[in-house]
Length: 88
Image 1 (cartoon, helix red, strand yellow):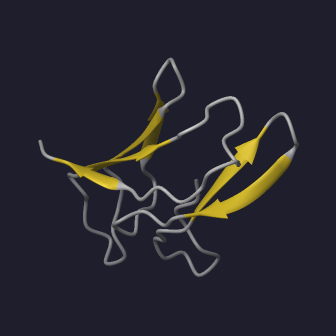
Image 2 (cartoon, one colour; image 1 turned 135 degrees about the horizontal axis):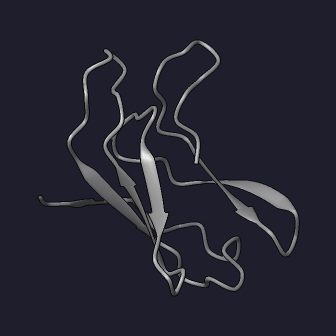
C-alpha cells in the first residue's frame, strides 16, 4: 500500500501484492491521502487497517480506515471493496 509519490506528496493509491502469484494489482484508493502511515492486517487476513500518517500539506492525520479482503487466500480475486472510515 503506497503512500508517497515520487514528488514527495502523500497519496491515496493502493496496490495489493499476491505472494501466490508474485504480482501487484491496483485496488480502490484510500479515503485520505497518506504518507508515513502504519498498516496492520488481522490474523485471519480479512481486514487491512491504515493508521495515521502525514497529509499532503504535511499535517498529522489522526484517522483510521480499513479495507475488507473478501478472499484472503487470493486477495487479487476481488478488488472492488472500498475503504471504510473507523470512528475513534
